[in-house]
Length: 284
Image 1 (cartoon, one colour):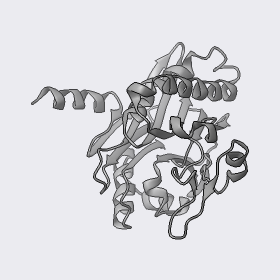
Image 2 (cartoon, rainbow, N blue to C red):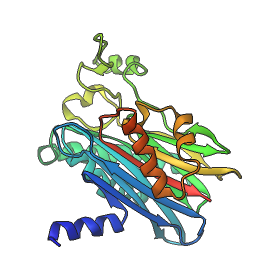
Image 3 (cartoon, rainbow, N blue to C red):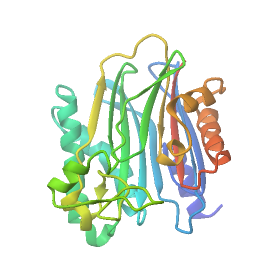
């Protein structure tokens, strides 16, 4: 086994993943009924895989945290990789994370983006979307996102979207107030300044004056009875499936990892050509 292969196995075991096709799984130590699994598949584009994930549990002080994230890079993968290694650290460094969680997460996102822009020479001109979820002691759920990767919670077979798709057409006024514009060329999707198909993202230094990196944050203080699973997935799934279709697709999957694989297989069968990454957290 090569050194590269050994490093990749270590990353998957630790809950980090990216490659042509990666999978991993794990479970909570304090609540044996909570498990997670992830799967990534490279799309049909000529560039290298640009999706990264974090899917793991860790102990922080006297609490167990489930840390889950999808980072969907564009124009290169360096910024998505940087986020994989740094965003949760920046979130947990905020002293008020435990008392004013929403403000702390928003601040951490903005701080992280500032650091990315400061290192643009090394990290490149690209950017990344993000959707993150922090599960605290198996009960409190904190979801944040910039861009079009999505978080969907299933309760008794019904989906509830916890993130907001930051589409340029929906945030046209904000973009124009910053001096930018939204193109609407027939046959194409709306784009910021004719370039980027999302209205919020990390990085993208050349467009930053017209983009926001402020996340939308949703805090679920206590998961209700009947909550089945959480889906985090990049837009390669949501381009071809509705929230309800995604929930229906995996309700009978045997475990979280199998569910993540099943969802991506269905998206590919529906002719999704993008890089696709998916995390499932099951509340059995």
